[in-house]
Image (cartoon, rainbow, N blue to C red; front, side):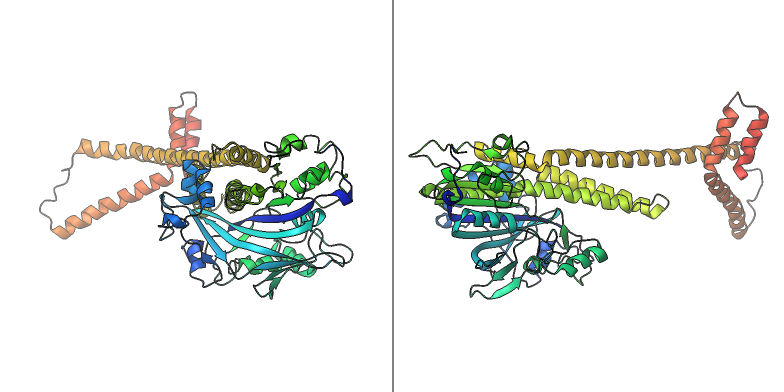
Length: 545
C-alpha cells in the first residue's frame, strides 16, 4: 500500500510476466485395461512424451536451480517429488517417485483475441505438462505462459480471463462471459493448431442437457487429447472429468517498473484474479477486504519505504490465485537461475502443485464415496457385497494417500513453509481432510458392525443346530450303535442303509438352519419363566408359519 493513490496514467508497467495454470482433473477407471493411465498414454503414440530423469549421472550437467529446488523441501517431501533415486524406468514402487510427468512440445505460443478492436496478443508457451500420481486417480495439467512489456490492466485481463475451461454464460450479443473472445494454440511457425469455441452456446447447453456435465472449450479438449472427456469413447486412453468449477487455479509473476505505484485495489485484483478496474476502486466490498493484508498477503519481503539494496517483493494468495509482484529494476527478481523467478517457477510452483494435489485427491475420494453410496441397494445381496468391496478399496486408497502423500509440513524454509500453510488454509484442505476421514471412518464402522452382525447370525444358527442335534446324539448314544446287526449284509445294502440315514439327517440339519431364527425365538420363549404354556405353544407354531 502506498501513501498516495496513483492515477490511471501513473499505474505501473509490466516489464515481464509469467502465468502458470494448475488444473486438476479426475481420472475415471479404465474399462478392461488395468494398466496405469500414464502407461496407456505412453503407448498411444500421442504428442505427449514422458520426461526423463532430472538427475543426470554427470553432476556437471545438473542445473543449480534444480539443486535449490531439491534442498528447499524436507526429506519426506523429496521422496514424494523425486523418490529415493529418481528413476522413471519400469513400474512405480515405494522407492521411486510416484509422479509421472508428460510434456508436449508442438505448441510454441498462444494468441489471445481481446474484446473490442484491440490487436491480438501473442504470448510464449513455456511448457505444457501432465502430472500423473501413482495410486491416485488424479491428473494435473500445468501450462506456463510468458509475456513482456504490457500495461498493468492487460496483465490483469490475462490473469482474470486465461484459464477458463468453459464459459460461465453469454451476454445478449452471444459473447462468452469472463472469457477471451478467442484463444488459439500456435506452433513454431505461428500456424493455428486449435482454437477456442466459447461462443458455441448450443454445444455447451446440449452437453448439460444430454449428459448432465459441462463440455470444455475446444482448445483445452484438443490439448488434452488423447485423454477424453467422454468415457464412452472406444477405447479411451483415459477418461477424465472436472473436479471443480470452470476457473482453473493460477499462479502469476509480475515484474513491474515501479511496484510502489501499485495501488491497494490493483493488488487485490491480482490476488483474487478479478477483472481490471480503476486503480482506486476496490474489486469487492470494503468490509469484505478489511483483513486483506493479514489474510492474503505475505509481506516478509515487502516494504515500499525501503530503497537501495532491497528487492521489494510481495506475495499474495487467495487459494484461487498465487501472485508474486516485484521490481523489474532488480536483477535478482528477474534471475531465472538463482533469483526469485527461479524460485517462483520451481519452489513455489511445487508448493502450489502439492497444495492443489492434496485438495483434488480429497475431492476425488469424496466423489468416489458418493458414487459408492448411490450404487447401494440394500434389497439386493449383490449390491451390498459390491458396496462392502468398494468401501474397503476406498479405505485402502485413503490410507495409502494419508501415509504417502498427505503432510502438513513441507519445508524448514520459512517463506515456503508459511506460504504452504496460507495456501492450504485458503483451499480448505485441512477441513476437507477431516470431513473425509470422518466419513470413511463411519463407513468402516458400518462394515465392522455389519461383519459382527453377520457373525452373530452365523453363531446363532450354529448354536440352534447344535442344540437340536443333541436330541439325536442323546438318543443314539443311549440306544447304542449296534442296536441292529447288519454285519452279515453285503456292501451295497450297507451303502443303502448309510444313505438312508445320511440323507434325512442332512435334510433335517438344513431345515434347522433354515428355521434357525424362528427356532431361536421359540427357545427364548421356552426359557422365559413369565410366559405361559399357551404363549410358548404359539411361539412353537410360529416356526411353520
